[in-house]
Length: 145
Image (cartoon, rainbow, N blue to C red):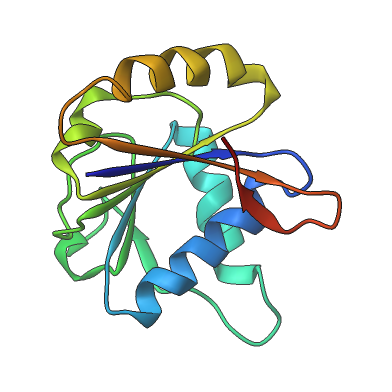
């Protein structure tokens, strides 16, 4: 499994998460986004309005037919939409993430100590590949050491 650590700095979650969703949907993949309730409501609104001419098809786990949603928003890491990709949008690691093929672990400066501890722990596990991403001065995502 692959865990991509995304250190949010120049661009906030509201700009990064839709781009991840777009790329996955282009390849026919599904995504489960996990965060707390208030943050999920903000993400829900953002996915409808992040671009003037488009939106990302998505829904909330507690709404009808969660299995039909290409992007599912939930407080729990349970892939009701059969997603193999998980975005942990609130900076909180959940060990259930280890059941997915790919995890996007998004964190800001307030969660950097937790992210470092999780990097050390996860990088020692068999079958887990960790990658660290940070934006350069121009806003381009580069893979770090």
